[in-house]
Image (cartoon, rainbow, N blue to C red):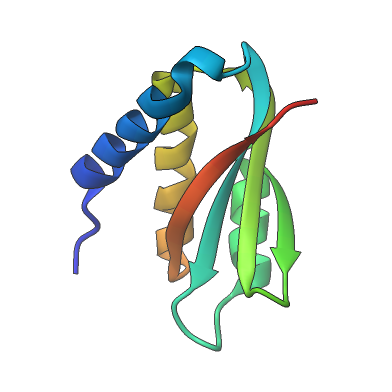
Length: 105
């Protein structure tokens, strides 16, 4: 099944709009992904994300992968730009997007 980037983008813009007045000017963005199967290639997805400038953190307890970028300017377009890139990589390794958040430094 093809991934629905249009819906994902719309959700990102809606989520950002909900708190944009309180959003920091700059922050680290963390994107979360979960594996679609038990034999997921954690090392491969982390290496591919890191090659594109993301830092990664594997949470074995929750079976989630965090891909972090920044600090960067915070607006809906910037969040989406990095989210789309990380999602494209993660999907290649059978990881599914599970949202994003901001970490102020």
